[in-house]
Image (cartoon, rainbow over all chains, first blue to last red; front, side, top):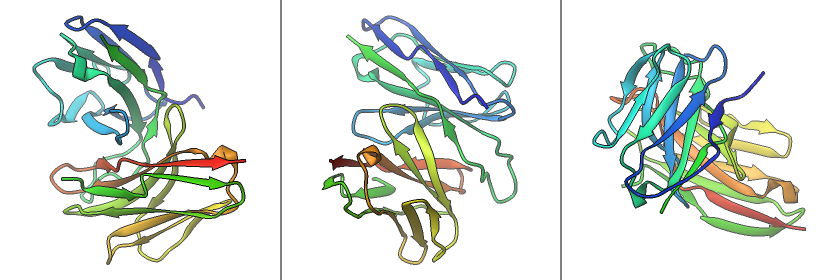
Length: 119
Length: 113
């Protein structure tokens, strides 16, 4: 079974330029997550989708970040314009969790990430 | 403030040593605690713990959760150079942010031959 696929693996841009990341989750996984991981830190959630609905985007900096998952499968995360502080690894994860009265339980599986460097 | 605190932040051992990694947490509505191994790429899943006192084991790795004292440990016996990685602990909070994982900073483990 293929894992979570992300592209590109590396991206170097100058500040103020736009950048986009793409994620294809594990087949059949309805929940998709975007995380940002700064050097020496754990991943921090940016946004979570259940199918095509963004159910948790409270930590997404909406002034410059946007995301979409139009058909409930692939997703893109965009930054426009990028700033120096956006340099990080952007991880995508997916799970087959379903929302229940007691919450989600299924394991999140991560993609290889996109390492963004903003110069 | 950090909801998940891992210690030590880094650890250097020799092959064959046994290591214990610590994770303490503080969330409003605990649901589960997860351990991941991160080499130079994606975090890979190791364990999910939901009940106190029940050890989960996979080969040389084992983990246990104490929900009263709010911590978990990850043990690795007979370490090998391939165990060198960052080990991440994450806690799921089923409160207002249903299903959100909070990660610690990780423990950087280096195993020398």
